[in-house]
Image (cartoon, rainbow over all chains, first blue to last red; front, side):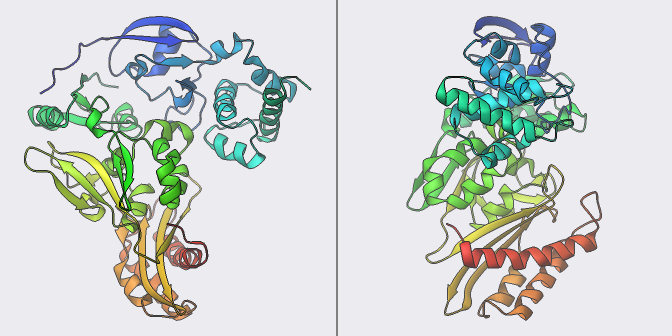
Length: 166
Length: 285
């Protein structure tokens, strides 16, 4: 049989472009490592059951619920949180589009929304309204009513395609 | 969450021996999208989790001779976006796209979904529509069973503690048969899922398959309803109504937050009609 791993697993991975090494117990969720271990407080816990999307981070470019994915699963992978997006001039057009379109009120869902939007635009730079609603259906906002979020993502798509802000 | 030890075998044989040695205190872990929620809430507790994602033998997704095989490591997203699935099994790609949300699909596996056997779920009823089989490795010879033999109750499978689902095999519908899958619900998990596949000849149902999920304790084939429809004209309202009644009789719906049993019986009946029409008019492979 396979031997158990050490109580604390040594993991090396990349967060927001920087190399990180941490020792984590297998039951530690990614969100707790990011928020408590690495002080990345832009990762938000809300439903804690993969439904609401507030805790969304990108792992190798793909959105996951950090509330439930174990931290050890990011071994050897690249993690992007909203702090990394905000610090990357090539990516802030997405968060700017949210601001310019007033696509947030309380802002608690916004980090997850922006990261999910990045992932959508990476795969599909010209999403229709239906594409956006379909992709973003797992990110819940209780303030905006979504219309402005859809508009913000459409504008971000235009900026990505045309390379200039309107 | 209660602390647990992590085991990371790298072969199927090692996975089986690890499960055998650890016994009831350990559980297989793939995507964890359902298992970890139950462990976080304290509903389930294990001393050890056996991670199957370090086993390369469980990779793989292919279509050969009209049979789709999906390894136990494949996520819903992998299945949903695979070219072979999109071209040869478009209905499976569509239903997989409808599972949960993109984050869950990026992590959760189709094999894990079947093994967790959560009743409110789409893949079981969909795969049953194709009469899919799963391959199971254990201490003895590999065995294969259908979905109905695998999932025997809510959160309950026929897997022994030292057995492991290695792959799902899905044979395409027989010549001329086309299918669909409809789901309904207002919660984050579906209230009802209906699979319907039909082969039409001269305006009658030459062959019919109907499967039900979410509303029932486990995915089920609606054989009595199929029998009533076979040979009947496509527009026979009496045959359709009878098929709906028979499905309501066997579905074993309960009163819960999704609605009363009576309401669910009504849903089953209505959605069988809709699914048959959809399969006739826009059925897919």
